[in-house]
Image 1 (spheres, rainbow, N blue to C red):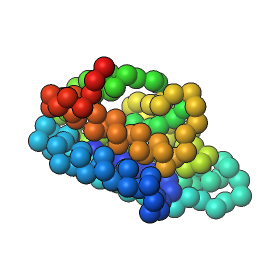
Image 2: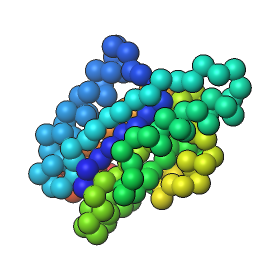
Image 3: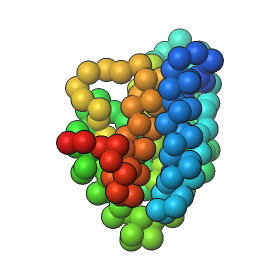
Length: 160
């Protein structure tokens, strides 16, 4: 099952990018061996429209142009479902084993995602009730993807 991350905003060079790349590279190395990956990342620029709802709508248009058709759509939203790492891993394993071709994860910009995208999601996922900067949310996501890959491959990275 391919893994796709679509995000609003572009990561700039710095410690966040280095941390993201470290987990991304680990996922890319191990994931395909167990049928999870490769991971692809696509970014769109944040809208500069002065109105929040219009910014969200325009960003949603850009996200919908990404290669997310025929996939399970997972959106990150603070109002979503919190899952343990094991439950998240089990969900990915189930989709993979059911022949789902791709899991697509969407991360909004500073204003969050347009409700139309959230409403279309197969899973609305939360990393807790706190609001995280969208660049840090990418790191949290790719780390959890690596943790899932580690769990499913029997690697000792995850220690409950």
